[in-house]
Length: 305
Length: 259
Image 1 (spheres, rainbow over the protein chains, first blue to last red):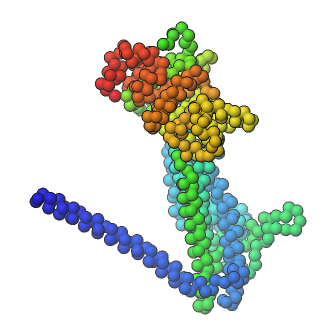
Image 2: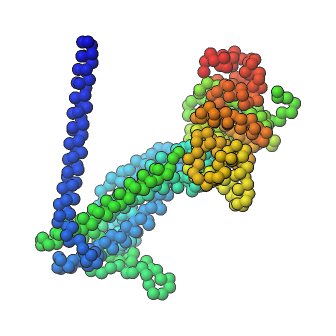
Image 3: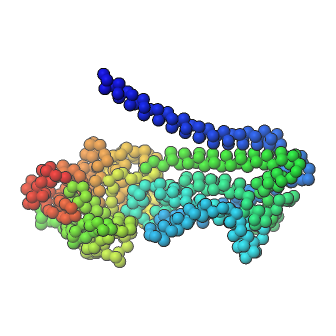
């Protein structure tokens, strides 16, 4: 009888710690959530009424109520496209090489460590590097191409790391099965490694692009304009070959820079525009991240080992 | 049961040494593999039987710090498939392997079986279709899957998956088929299926099987090699090994005194 009482007292004592930790954990979570929620609600209350069709189809203007983000979202879109085109092939190829071809020794370990370090470098450093290399050395100008390449470099480590993680999630038994059938390295990569890791790679690409779309500092460093009342050259043209890449060399602005520009003005009407741009950026980031989560769960369901 | 006169060698392991980093796994194994016979490798965990089997199709080349010396001669031309000048791809094209855990590709049943032909560059569709059917029949899986060749292989049961892996290996008509504990992840009924299959297949292909189950070795194999701590202790006709072992350690193992 007394023994049972001891056991129950012992359990009560230990359960108290369970409860204490659950409480602390919940409070920490709420702190993060409430902060985020306040930000979103505050931004939305100010910004959402300003979001109408003409906000997307107007250039910036001296008059706050006529100003829109046409040049900014087109610029953001063009730069994301350039970033994706240069960062995806480079990042995926580098990740596949490191996982499947490179010998595992101290050199590859140093490379691995430095790729992770690269992901943590302040983005303005990339901007300074790009100013020296792309703008002055390679004379690419303060163009969409320069911006795309800069952001491409910025997100490259993220793509490499997620590619490697996605490849590592493939069980070695699958790799062995392929090699045991007499397949070459490239056939194993082409028929198995890339298809089975594409979900993870895609997730990494989307997350890296959602980071790139909000970057401001490196683009200011390479000389993005803050007031642009024209669009890049159309990629379509009337005569052969009907497509051109002249737009790559055009000056640009992007949404976060437009937002920054409006915020630095003294008139409060412009601040409303800034909040609206913030909402647009936020929604886009949420959509991209949501898409990434959806893709990941879809691929996980499809891939059973 | 087995008449020694009609036996032909299919392969021969000669003084094979293997180490994983500093850890020695095989200390000089010599072993014959007879044509159209089933050779079982038995022994307690860590004796090196799976390591030996994986040497036959150079699986160890996929991993750094595996070192080996010695020869495995593939008859009739006595080509040393462990030679540095031999491309592992050649060895794997000639010697098929089925693994411990069924490992079908997350693709369709058809794609799984056709994979070996695909990587060899075979394009003729009628030939591939014919070979897929033949291999699935050899693996006694055809009747179960003929109506859903294009559905996913991972939806099959464990036993069916393993027979699919056998069909996949058979589709390229390997000279030797390696089976690495092919039933250890399966239920008793599927196990019996696979064992009957092995009996059937020995007509067409030379088989080498690693197994944890002594009963299985006694049921399916013509020859048995008992290994212990990286050494081949005894090799002989399975009847003899299981009824009248010559070495004390073999006797202790098969009577269940250790392992």
